[in-house]
Structures are given as structure tokens and as C-alpha cells.
Length: 175
Image: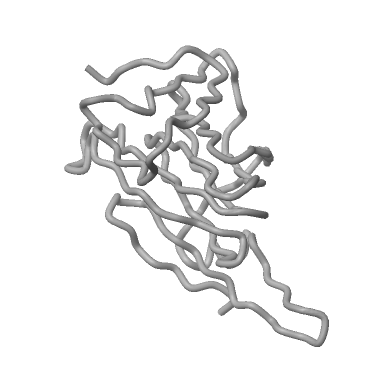
């Protein structure tokens, strides 16, 4: 198989590690294959791909869309980031819990974010380029942003500086 799937602490969230094929010029790998996802019981039809270019200290999110929620596949194309995924699914025991991961382009991993979760990421390198695939149609009118420093979530971003917050809309607190 071309991918290894690792379960994460939030139900439905997975780290997907591709097989790297090394040759005399470097290496190559596949970041998405709908047939392999389907065979692995991930019946997700991604419809849109968005790329974010961000500079050092830039924090994007914590984004989610009002219903209908979308499944997402996040890939770091260059640089390194800390990504946070917050569970907003009322009927899950991980409701209002979050996971935090460091991802780099060298790792070549993808993060599968299930429907009903919010995400945000902080650029740790000089710049980052992050691709996010979505299985639903994006609607700016449905876009919501949780505050990156919400005291109820109490996210430790792991840095000793104040990030540059890049939000498309005004953020909100959970409480």
C-alpha cells in the first residue's frame, strides 16, 4: 500500500504517511489517491483545493464552517507548522478537546480532519505553503473563526512570541 494510516486522539482524525520512492534525483510520493482512500473505508470526495502561503509567526484560523461541515485533508507543501484541530461535535466525548501536531514538508504527511472539527495553523519556518482539500463547497458566508487564544480551549501553541493573526472574519469565543 502507498499509505500508512495512524489514528489520532480525535475520532475520525488520521495522520496519513505516504510511501516515499527515492531515486537518483531525490524522491517522490503521492499525497492523494481517491481509490486508496475508498479502499481504506474513507469515502470522501474532495471537491476543492486551497493553498495558503504564510510567513513566519502567521497564525491562520481556527477555522470552521457552519453546517454543513466539511472533511478536510491538510498537506504541508513547504516549511513547517503547528496545526491544531478542535472537536466541535456535541455528540462526541472529545467535544471541545483539541489535538496539536507539528508538520513539515519533509514529513510529507497529510492530516485528515473529520467533519465537525475546526482547524488552525501557525507557521514555524520562514514561510509555509499549506494545501487544504475540502469535500464541500466553500462559502465565505458560512466561515467562522474561533479565537486562537480562547481561555476555555487554553491551547498551548508552543511558542514564546505573539503570533500574527490572519483571520478572514472576526473571531469568536467558545463560552
